[in-house]
Structures are given as structure tokens and as C-alpha cells.
Length: 159
Image (cartoon, rainbow, N blue to C red; front, top):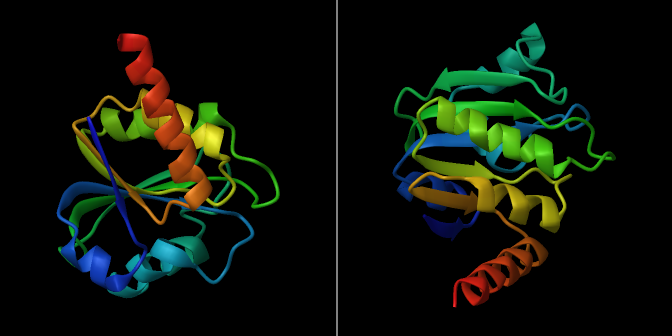
């Protein structure tokens, strides 16, 4: 599996070419920010309407699959509830979201990491993804560093 990093900008999203884009919604972050806000703009407010109608609230464990209508560089959009920004997202829940993406057929996945996910939770979940390509959008320096450490640990175990 290849892991790539992408900035959370319109330009970066416009150049993205991938099967599935996954976003995480928090229960206490409105209006939408980051990649979710950019994607909502490109989808003419479809994510905001899903929030307003109660189709998704951001509650931990929620899942929503949406088409993108070719308005972003992914065929489809998966939205996962990540709970409250003040409660750390467990590695198990992040891993379940990535597993759900694989069950939905995502062999290539672009993922905006939730702000309430610790670098260790991110590293554990990324290591469990068994697809071909994973693009992490807007990863923090700390998250990137932890992923790099985990990759080095795996490589030394194989040697």
C-alpha cells in the first residue's frame, strides 16, 4: 500500500483522482470546516443539507455514502461520525471506519483525518488499511511523524 499526503486546499482537491473520499463529521463543529467545508461547497451544500435533515449528525459510528456528481476528484464520498471534538476518537473506531470503506469497495481512499484522532490512533488505523492507495489529507506534522515512526518500526521488524 502506498501512503500519500495532500494539503487541504481547493487546488489539491481539484487534482485528486481517487475512487473514494472519506470525511469525518464532529457533533460540535458547525459550520463545516476543512475538507468537509470545501467538499460541501463543491457539492452545492449537500453535506449541509444532510446535517440539517438529520441524515448525519456527527455522532460516533454514523456512516453516510454519497455520490460526488464528479464535482470533486473522487467518485463517491463516505462520511463518518467522529463524535465530539473534546473526546478523543478511539483507534478502534477509526479502524472501523477504514474497514467500512474497504467493505464499500474502496481500494483507493483519500481521507481527511478527524481533528480528535491522536497520532497513535491514526498510525494504528492507517497500518490496518489493506487497500492499494491511501491519501491522507491535511495530516498534522505530529500525525505525519508518528506514521513515519511506525513505518520505520515495521521495516526494522521485517529485516
